[in-house]
Length: 375
Ligand SMILES: NC(=O)c1ccc[n+]([C@@H]2O[C@H](COP(=O)([O-])OP(=O)(O)OC[C@H]3O[C@@H](n4cnc5c(N)ncnc54)[C@H](OP(=O)(O)O)[C@@H]3O)[C@@H](O)[C@H]2O)c1
Image (cartoon, rainbow, N blue to C red; front, top):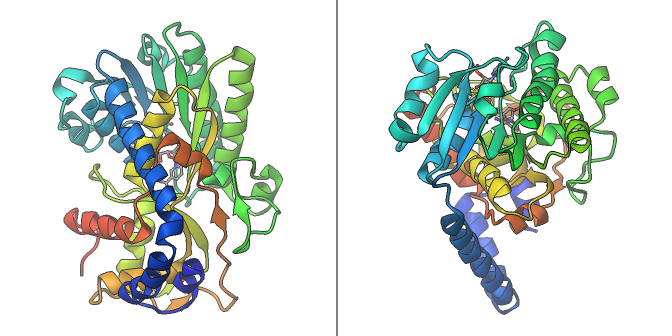
């Protein structure tokens, strides 16, 4: 019920909470065992995370200067891991300074130069690693040559990294950063009652027909990865996040944070689209848990909530009344409906999502601090 209200009516967050509170109180008894289970799970996760630790373990992160990877490197260092990190240009301070400044970096972060399209360039990085987090893949929409700019780095690049993995006897598990783009883009209807889960796969033909090149790049890359690891007997887990938002560590603006920045920076309209949203810290944590939890397997969808852009704008207006936000949709069509994404599997990893309102606040505060939005 709360989901419908949040997506359709111009309610304030306080009004929504007021409406939801009585229901929460009524169902308190019913949910207390749920809460106890959740608390136990959180405790177990914390225990698991601190017990397992990363001290003495060496892992690799590809594309380390990226938005998600920077958080992953930060949290891995925090947990005591030694991190071998690949960047395309180790001489570019915009790509390295924020990493070298992280706690633990001085002693346990090593930067390597590597390009996804250079055969064998990941061999020396993956060598000696217990875990490989392959996050590097181009993520932007304004492409002129989709094959060269998106598809080759995604697909050939993933196979290139996995080939290096197949040569490393130290390797225990690969965690691949895939995407909801590889899950939910097919011809099945997506409406409020539909629950998308890890058994869904995107349809490459549909991607080609609609010129959804980034979506195609992630779909083909994940598919190629599963085929390769099956053949080589490599243990791989994929993390499939939707739109990732939250604070930026890197000094440059990435595509998903820009989606929020654009709304605040005077866009005349908001897109008529419903996306899943998730915090970058949850995404980075999920990667680490996917490596550390022995029973982790297969794919993990990461979506805190699906929301239409009109809902994102409404929450932003509540949070920042003085911001200039778009009033109308980019087209006159009915709003693209929301749908649901199952949280069951990711809960079993121990992730309890940061809520969308906080994700948006953290994004805007970070964009403000870095000078990407002004109001
Ligand atoms: N952000 C999201 O909403 C989202 C959602 C789902 C999945 N993902 C996935 O998460 C991963 C990271 O995305 P992000 O949002 O963190 O994007 P990002 O900040 O743009 O990072 C992308 C990284 O990939 C690297 N890269 C691109 N082409 C490369 C090449 N040819 N050789 C080596 N490295 C290359 C980039 O290196 P440079 O720094 O040198 O450019 C950068 O470090 C990607 O796999 C993306 O598909 C992102």
